[in-house]
Length: 172
View 1 (tube, rainbow, N blue to C red):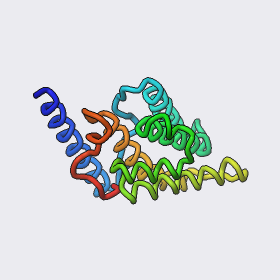
View 2: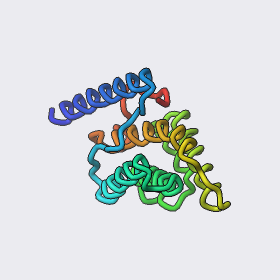
View 3: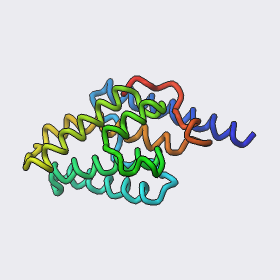
């Protein structure tokens, strides 16, 4: 019975999150805050907290867009790897994102957002590229929305097969 109550609570929380994201998008707001729900995994929790600080610093123009982009990539990769399990830890980012779609954790639209993040980060990091504040500001809402959905799915009760959040597969 406790499991049903927790699953019901999770579905309600997910529906509320979806409503907030939809409303934020309709108001041309950022569909996802810089603060993330607590997660069970200590490493992911620590990195999410660090990302919150980096995002706040970026917003206050005390962190570069390149550092912010790198931290977004690191945290999304770590979160996916944690959800997929140890055998996926050393797999390529794109492979992890594809596996997340096949397991129902992400939509195809979410995967495209993450692969876009990965591609932009690769250019910045490995080809001496830069990303200006305006470009990152355009990328940020969709990446944050995907990351918030991933974090919500790490909190779903039950095993990995039960983690798919109900009702949202539209990539918002």
